Amino acid sequence: MNRIVFALCMVLLISCGTKKADNKGEEKKLNPNGDSELAVLMRTMHEHAKLLKEEILAGKSLTTYPEEIKTINTAEPTPGMIANKEVFDGFAGLYLSKLDSIYLTDVNIKLQYNHMVNSCVDCHQVHCQGPLPAIRKLYIPIN
Image (tube, rainbow, N blue to C red; front, side, top):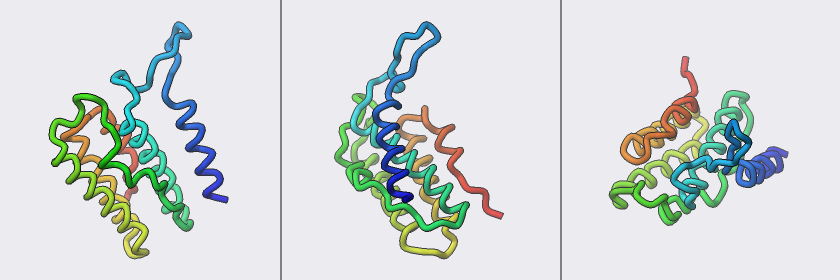
């Protein structure tokens, strides 16, 4: 059931999430630099992280992450946003490692999840700082 809901959310996100209407009723792109493969993938990653957060907080089993997340190193970035591909690939590898660690353990899962969010923050401090406020909202408070 969770997979069906997730799939429907992803379809809606991809089909509806790329444009917003301004106050004059005209449509604007969500990303002023265009919707590159990597930008779309990052939105998928963000939606998946929000879903994981909800599942972790509710004590539910975790939804498998979308396979396209594994294409982070090959997705075409928005021109000019990745100054150093080797540095980006390092951050991407760390993110994938942290994402996998969430699924490989049931010990300190909140901490593992927050490590994944940290990997996103670390990368976005170097590449494309715009999404940082939204990413920081993903953290799970640990008591």
